[in-house]
Image (cartoon, rainbow, N blue to C red; front, side, top):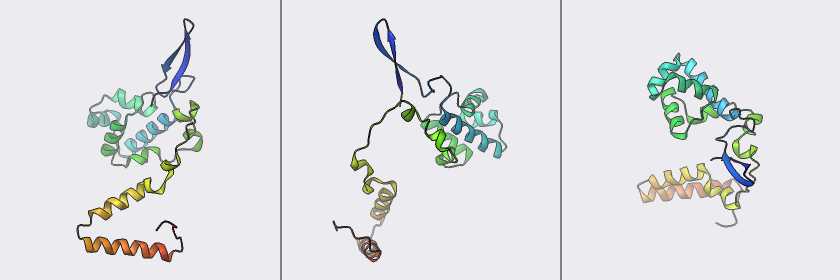
Length: 165
């Protein structure tokens, strides 16, 4: 997502992408945090910036820029880093302070779009989607029905009744 700032150019309002930098032009604290986590894992594995760069097809200078948060890490590069460093992608966001989280480009740009209620729906939660996928991977229809009956029985036993069943 690109964040835009309004600038007046010849009496007209122009829009300039800030590429996730803070208004002062400094790297975004989230990018700095993610880069610090890359550095932490790299050093824990005993890798040099050059070795990590070679494993990713990058120069050590590019790794250095990632680690300092000067260059943002794309989703595909983050995926590659997670594989090479043998960590889940969530590792890069672990231990992030609330203060750093509050510096996301979305929040510092005052974007206040409220998600529609459907987006907060339990049916759209990751756990629900994984459960449904697992359920439909059960090839035997009788076994699948038993799993369904078990889930219903457990829900009923918990006392958390849904009006819509």
